[in-house]
Image 1 (cartoon, rainbow, N blue to C red):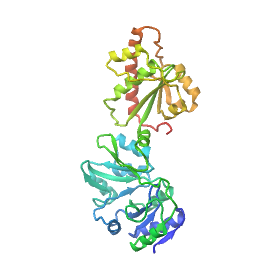
Image 2: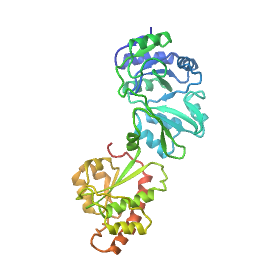
Image 3: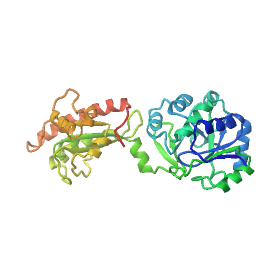
Image 4: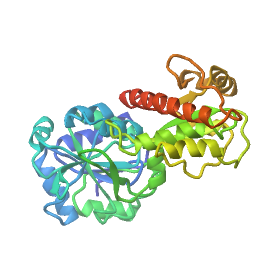
Length: 376
């Protein structure tokens, strides 16, 4: 039987695992999703053995990288959306399918043969990469100093993947696995979600898993929040104008979601008729707006908060002091956008036109800077 250590990964057990991996042997290690059968990706002996266990001589595996920097450097990631996805979703229960126009250069940097972590398909050549959210495992991966691939024990027919039983270990022994580290049930008890990153931007779920689509979308979206007083005139016009501007996409390809709220708003009031008319004249869909008050959740999710006046900015900062670095007036010069309510349609028309220019300017600047987003 292989050696089994019923303990979390520590310095001693890590050293044993690394010795086996460097020797071209297979080991079973815990991750945040499923237990995995691990092998050194550059070892032809180990890859052949792992494919034999899977009964698939052409099996492709996920490179389990120790950190984001290793992935960005090895794949030469320059696409803003690709780098943003790595930043926002990793480490975590996600497997990335990342396209690359020059796969041979990536293989050369990593010292790997074709078809170990990459596969050619209708989307071009894609590399399969994971950054597991398991500190002990990442320490092992880092100390190996070369790429390690893993295949779920469930995929290998060695149990459910979520736990490691004595029967699983006995079967692993029959298949020549040298070491099993048992760290108890995995955190997610599900396989990772496979996300395909598009060569020209965009993303899609290739295989469902531990993170659902809504959770992924919330992490990838950059949220912009527009704030006024009652959320029936200025901020909803800004929101509609931003949605219209974003409909053609932004250069970075990173999704941006816009929301509006009011510092003294009730919930459920419609946009004023004059605001609807002003937007419609400009060919902008006003949508089916319903007012909402400013909340801590909205503030926490927003990466940028643009207010109609300086007084609104101060109100946001007083409401949530942590929002201060992310809060500023919509006008970069700090000038207020006056409230048009009750002042006639021409004032609304003028306000809408000014808002259009300010919103476009702010969105362009926002898209050019990719920075850590607000709290999840």
